[in-house]
Image (cartoon, rainbow, N blue to C red; front, side, top):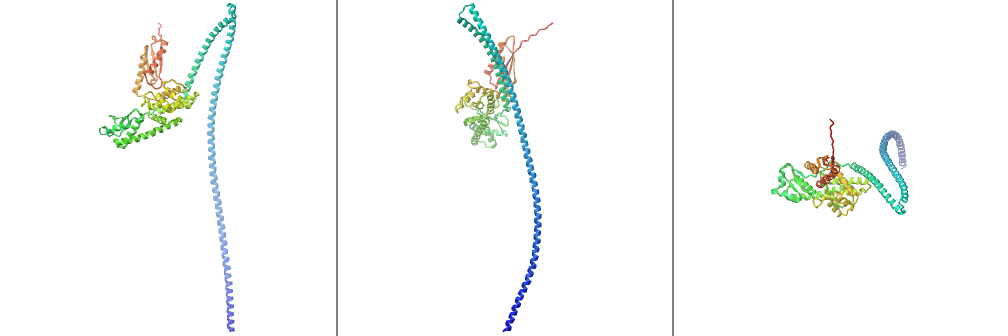
Length: 525
C-alpha cells in the first residue's frame, strides 16, 4: 500500500514537472512568436507610414494644382468682369457724350432764341421810344394848335378841345392802321414758317413705309377642271357658296384664277379663305360649303378682333369699347386708292400727336382722334352717307368725347371745326394720303384724272394751254396776256381750283399755277 502511494505520488510529481516544463516551453515559443509578430507589425506600420507620407505628398501636390486652376479661373473671371465693366463704362461714356452734344445743341438753340428775343425787345423798345417821341410831338402840336385856335377863331375852350381831339383821333387811327397792317404781315410770315417747320418735323419723325397693301380678291386654282367642280351640277355649288358668303363669284375664261367680288371687305376675305380651303380639301358640295364658310367666318372674326387689339396697342389707345376695336380691325381688309385704311389711321394718329405736341396741345387726344377718324369706312358700304358722318354717329353711341366726334366728322370739312384738333386731323390726313408711295391708281384712272384736270383748265376763257404735272398734283395754266390782266389772272386761278374741288375726287391737294407773260420784241435795223 505504501509502495502504491509512493508510486502515485511520484507519478503526480512527474506529471506536475511535465506540465511545468511544457508550460515553460510553450511560454518560450509564444514569446518568440510575439517578437516576430511585433517586428512584422512594426514593419507594416513603417510601410503604412511611408504610404501615408506619399499619399499626403500626392494630396498636397493635387491641392497645389487645383489651387492653381482655381486661381487661373478666378483670374479669368475677374478679367472678364473687368472687361465687361470697362465696356459698360465706355458705353456710358458714349451716351454721356451724346447727351452732352444734345445739351450743347439745346444751349445753342436757347442762345439763338435769346438773341432773337433780345432783337425783338430792341425793336419793341425802339418802337416805344418812337411812339413816345410822337406823343410828345403831338402834345406840343396840340398845345400850339389850341393857342392858335383860341387866337384866331376866338372859340371857347370846349369847342377847341373837341376839334383838336377829333384831329388827333384821326391821326392816331391812321398810324394804328399802319402798325396793325405791318404786324399782321409779320405774324402771317411767322405763322407760315412755323407751320412748315411743324409739318416737316412731323413727317421726318414718323417715317412710314411707302409700299401699300392691296386686298386680294382673286383665288388661284390648280387647273381649269376645278372651275367645273366649283360651279357644280347646274350651278348648285356656286349658288350655295354665294348664298353662304354674300359675295359674287366670277368664273370666266381667265386661266388659273377665279374672282371673288363684294362690297363688304370682311365678307370678301371670308369668301376668299373659304374658297382656298375648299380647293385644298377637294370636297365641294353645298353641305360642306356651308360648314366650311361658317368655320372660316368664326376664324376671321377672331382675326379681326386680334388685329384691332394689336392696332390699339400700337397706337397706345385705351378705353375703347370692344365693338369699336372690332370695327377698327375690319379696316385691315379695306383699302383707299391702294392704301390700307388701318395703317393710314395709325399714320394719322402718330402725325397728329407729333404736330399737337409741337403746338402745345394734348398729344393723347390728337392721337385718339387721328386713330378713329376713318372708322366710318368700315360701314360706308352698309350705311348711306359719307364716312365722316357715319363714323361720328357710330362713336356717339359709345360715348366718345365731343372733341373726338367733331374731329372725325369734320376732317374733310363737312362740318365747321369747334376745336383746334379738327384742322390738325385734317392736316395729318392730307399728309398721310399725299406722301409719295402712299396711294396708287390704275393707269386708266390716272390718265383720266390728268385729262380731266386739263379739260377743266381749258374751259376758261383766255387760257391758251395747260399741263398737268407732278403726277396730277399740280397744273400749270398759261393764259393770253393780251386778254387777261393781273387781277383777272388771280380770279381765274381761284375759279379753276374751285371747279376742280367741285367736279373731281382726288387724294391730297392739287396746286394751280397760272402764268401770264408779256413778251415785247423789237428789231433794230
